[in-house]
Image 1 (cartoon, rainbow, N blue to C red):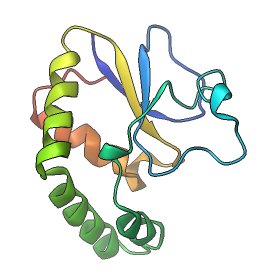
Image 2 (image 1 turned 180 degrees about the vertical axis):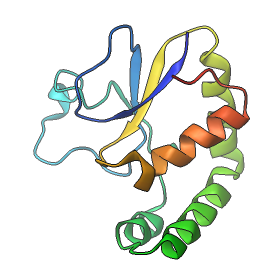
Image 3 (image 1 turned 90 degrees about the vertical axis):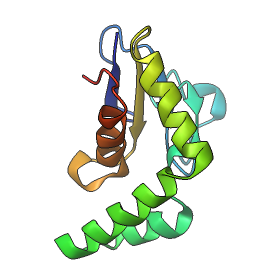
Length: 128
């Protein structure tokens, strides 16, 4: 059992389990009834996405310094009670079920899901 960190919209891996969309907004131009069928997500959970202000900051991060600034602020958001408890829950579930969390970004290294990976690992999650 484990959590996969995925790009939403990419084909699902075998035994991936429930796919959780940790994004601020649903995919544009896709009817809600087709989110899962088109491999976006089964459940939308924006609680683990950056605030709109940080999404904008991340999209405009041109240097490593800019990116590190985003990461620091996003980690602070994820340390807040609700987000922190959500991360604890996912980490615990990773030991008993397969699931995945993801975002639309092409490059995981410049996406908040890389930070989610780090935070989940620190909480003892099984991560593929």
